[in-house]
Length: 289
Image (cartoon, rainbow, N blue to C red):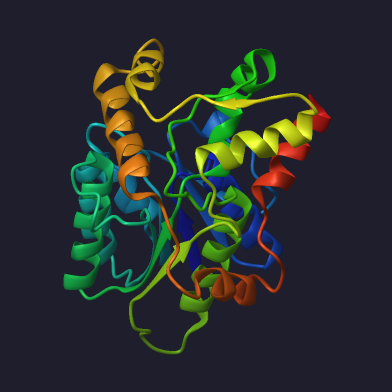
């Protein structure tokens, strides 16, 4: 049988495809533009999107397990609910869903509320599912590296409570492991929720200190006020999305993104290796710059 991967061309989805292929799985990806798809040999490409019902139904033909990742968008909730309905309609019961940590708590942030709603649907519709709840992606820092390097400022308003940033490679490998575990299970497995976190819970000052060490020159934390963050984002993304990112940043400051006891140990055991750290990421970026 086949595992269908949505969001397969993004930072996490592409790693998920590679990890599944590495493990010998039959993989199909759903993408809007098949001509731009560049996947390993043997990966089947289905053209369409999560709101194109005909292409979605076609993509689910012969599929046994779904990896559902849908990006932040104004119609994200509709995409998630439609996809889960079509999955059920076509007989797919096994799902790995990429949610977000604290989805049930940060409900004033639209995409957190969306993911909380999708989680409830998965539970109430009786899917055999793993719900993955990642923290802030370390990979987001690619967007701000020029500010760090050129101005000596770490501009993300992540606050002083702490954020356990997670590497996309770790997210994807856990997702692949869970997809194959669900796929190969002889029967229906219970729903599980896994927090995906990094090995260190870091404050804004902690991250600035790491960059100072790695670059060998002072890097200062830009502070907790998200006003400038929103204004900058609004120059290259829709204003509603920039505002949504501001709301998320405000929750970093007020609550943090803090693992539960045992999260790091659980992930290390699942992966059979240490988690990628923020310091390693910063060192990789600085070395390649």
